[in-house]
Image 1: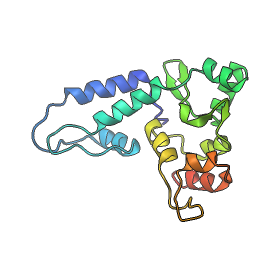
Image 2: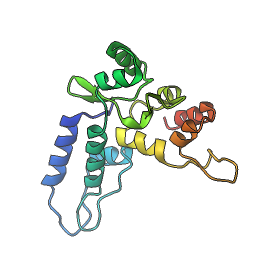
Image 3: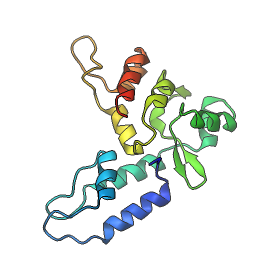
Length: 176
């Protein structure tokens, strides 16, 4: 099942989290809650009973708010909106379903084009990855993406600097 949550799903998750009262002890989570937290790369509840997932919900809502609509992405890339929808279907653009429409996170765009090679990497990512986890993965330095001097680059930086996308694609395929 695809976990690309829309705004309604995020709002419901925030509402459900807000309904849980702090107890001073770690909260018991359902298997579903544990899976969502793990897939979103969120921390477990703190000892005061507050969910670190509150920060994850904020990250998700920020990701949505800063994303482009299909029409905006089409204008940016100088293509028709139908081409954007086609790329979403091919998983060569990353999108978050919002109701019956899509939101396209900005991290995959550089000026008026896609980040070079990101379309190939996106197709290799597991379709079940939480949108915040996808963004974090692209922005987190990876030890297998070292450049001269031993500096580890994030997959997004690796691609932006023009390095071969095959290494990032291989790392993405290992996530599934």
